[in-house]
Image (cartoon, rainbow, N blue to C red; front, side, top):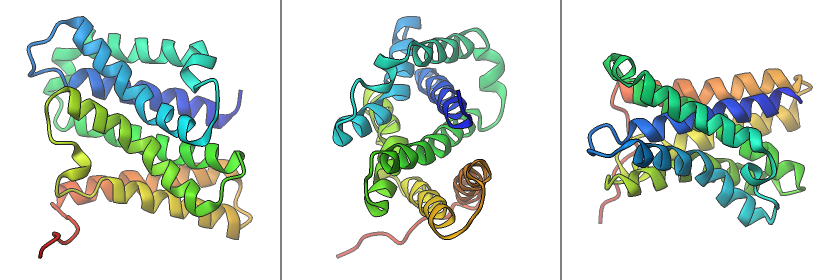
Length: 202
């Protein structure tokens, strides 16, 4: 098991927590929270694998991903009152999830021989589509359609990863850490200072 594998398990855990927490104001039972956590965690990766023709899907081929999701949902349920008191907790877990999944999506695509430009898009899809499904299930406007730097942060991190991977001799694990950090910083700074891309107008 390599560093990437553990990152993917951790990213799955973060997304499961964020998905379960998204149900906090929806008057749902534990199953509803667990189902939303599950869809959030596997949605982006499953879409990526389907588009790339990579089977079996990751969570079907490796039971550890289901365990990671289960642990994330249980943590969200058991420590719910503690977690929701922490400021910006949902944002933190979601940001960690998208940052891990973006780079892992890029690596998965590159490993299958996909061109770098497409790999960057696959990384972004891996990161954001679980959140889109989560927001749809909770009857919220998907975050990618809000005036926030979200998918853009993922795309920027993917590009940084590809540039460092293809143009420098930097060791892969350091590249992973740097690229993930870029996404986290862009996302958190944009939220803190309410930064957004220009609006689309006629």
